[in-house]
Length: 512
Image 1 (tube, one colour):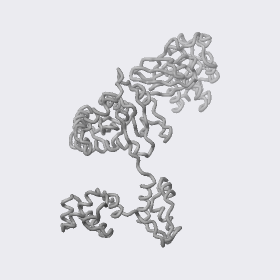
Image 2: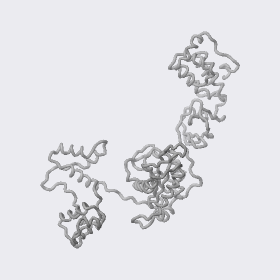
Image 3: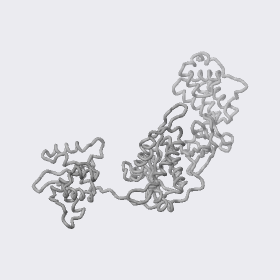
Image 4: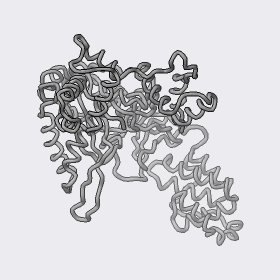
């Protein structure tokens, strides 16, 4: 890789010491650079015809032009064609296209063209002129930049010895470079929201903007001009009164502040903790917090102040106040209301008003509550159920007199079951009777009807007869009977037998 160029002040010192008769080796040791660097500057001065003392009035800019002349594209007598650098830059954005490939194509079209070294050097010079970097100026309290570090740090289970890699979240204030770091288990949405709440609490206020990368927990659609922000993330931002700004895809300069902060955190935090063993996340974060406080207290080169001092002077007075309560994490899910006017959340079914059957609703799932929204209005709220495969139903959500949407009434379902066979109708009666509300058995009955698309009616009816005898009440049980062929033992009986009748089975007329 090319060596970073010395400042013009140090280059002048190289030339002065060389004029005093010091050897290049001694000059290199004195200035803390390599012998090759010193030799290179001395050679450039000789080629430029410079001697010490330098000509009076020669400023740094003029000296730099003499020592580092811009690459000559072609002399007046050189008629070799010059590549179209805009085309070269455009092609390099395409997958697997390299400079060597483009140079080979250029030489194939121009056999007497320039060499590969000239091609690369001149292209770099063109890029610097065509796309200079814009220096970003950040106002106090305006922006905080957030990201995850690429490296991880391990914690150990003290009992099993299992190793778990923790991610390092890093944030940096735009104006003061005030840095925050915290370890968390993953880059999941819940952890992403949690570290933001910790960040705002650490800052003691809320910046105007949060600038983030395009990770999945933050951005659902990483569009350059209209990125889609995750709904939970946007809700969190609204709670704290801040705004999310997503960096453009593949544009690290948009968040250069946090890119540098991540590098510093990896060197100052992760590198220092690499030989320590931690047995809990809390223990790890205590160690990280101590190092972050130490980092923010150090004097920054070129500023004459520490990050803590700059934060207290520039950023802290401009931060917005924290809300009275921290944000409570909740995720959102889009659902379509089922024919039984319930929506499924984590294996459990929650009721909605029956008039919303077949409608799309938004469900907000918090730790203790499940809220259902339709067109921005909350139309149902439930306590979060700890169990799966159950139903939570509010009586007011049920239709009066068990009116159902479309044709699916208990009697209609039983009539549909009779078209398959008498045992199917009897099975439907048992399922509907076994539920607290008849409508809650509709989904199972519809599932049995769908099996008739894959199996003939006689087999489905035989499977239902077996299901009644073994007290099966689910679609999965009937499907298993059909797949394993256990229904075949009942095929001969089904043509002659009458529907099962006993005191716990009511006729279809009961539901009319």
